Length: 135
Image 1 (cartoon, rainbow, N blue to C red):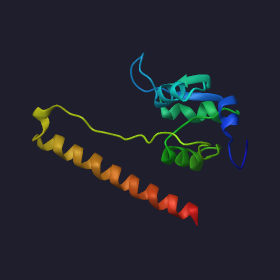
Image 2 (image 1 turned 180 degrees about the vertical axis):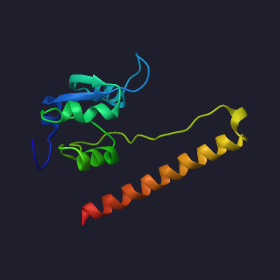
Image 3 (image 1 turned 60 degrees about the horizontal axis):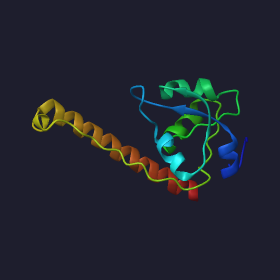
Image 4 (image 1 turned 45 degrees about the vertical axis):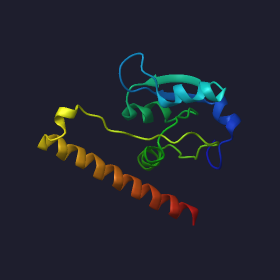
């Protein structure tokens, strides 16, 4: 598929590149969600870094399921297409967790603040892009 919309049937029929971060035995969001949805995906390959994704997608008919902003950024820098999801998936909420003894640590507080500011900026830019794409 080059342009237009991706149908749900096309999505599940396509070969997928799966990104699994973390230790062996961990699961990606898709690996947890799709079995519950009742339809299996065809995993062509799995990578352990988003940096490897373009190499596994470019020049193929494979697809990958990504956060919207990451997918849009990849489409700006690589010869891949960004296409919206063909159905609703649960919203993914990101969280921070740390040991309570670090609550008052100045460097840790600074880092948490930087993460929170970056997340707020990304969310704001995403909302702005979404509004602009609806016009």
